[in-house]
Length: 118
Image 1 (cartoon, rainbow, N blue to C red):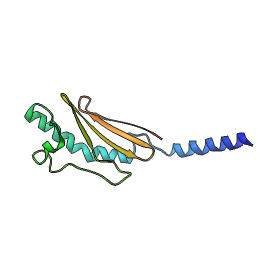
Image 2: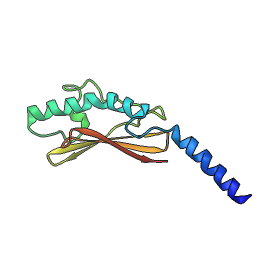
Image 3: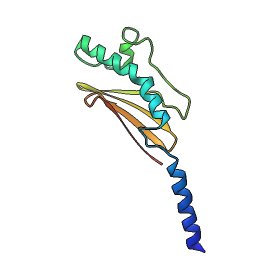
Image 4: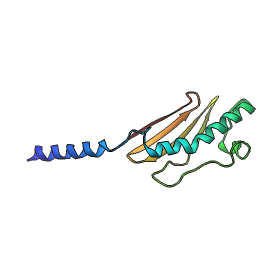
């Protein structure tokens, strides 16, 4: 009897997880990519003009970007975090569903990378 219950639980978990999407493929990630793309473009324009990235995102408003986009309606992406790293920058947003996920844009790599757990 106990083996039947364990097998049933396993089947349920497999079915639940099969409906989950990979972190880069979820609609919340795609929304975040679209929502925060203008920040990336503005940061690159700023660097072209000043030969370095700004210390904060506030430095790109309003000359390079009218306002910092945000999304504070879970499970949609969190507000973006910005970290200047010497000659590069890192943008980060988080979202839930399925699981907890983090997406990072590293200017040195010029691409988003997402990871998470269930």
